[in-house]
Image (tube, rainbow, N blue to C red; front, side):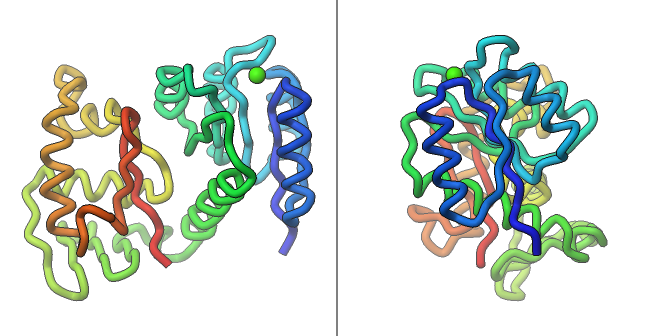
Length: 233
Ligand code: CA
């Protein structure tokens, strides 16, 4: 198999070098783009496997770069943001980014984020996902056609909202879903800020799904951002 090609979009030369050195040492190929415009050109001409995108670029807004890429491609985008840019990070996820890294990040964190995205890509290309009627993750099985979910072969009794939440998370396995995305998908636009209700339903869903709700195996919490279902090995 070819080594994955990563497009690194970062205007800060020191961070860019740290990333490319890490990629080179870990069997990834890479391309670099120091601006949003060059990022769009490189993305279109080389069709990279994953884009690592800094949100603070000198020319275009990083979120604008995501919107433009999303207008023609679903290539995975991991955004890199500074800690102070929390709202930018959420905006980026809502615009279609798959995941995020917060500066300063370690080499291990960077590699872990890349691995999560690669697992998601590998999973998305499997037959199970293509058939689209059953989702299997560890001992969890969601039968979309039948409208039910099982854990170790036992049916889990879910309320309609819990089931809807489970479907949203499983259909986007590996991807961070924001509070806004989840609440809008469940309750529609008018209730989009009801994060408190979302937390309640997420807590009851977890109780039914997770062996240890305090150290969840399936659903990860991203404080102030949203939730992600992890692909269990
Ligand atoms: Ca920057």
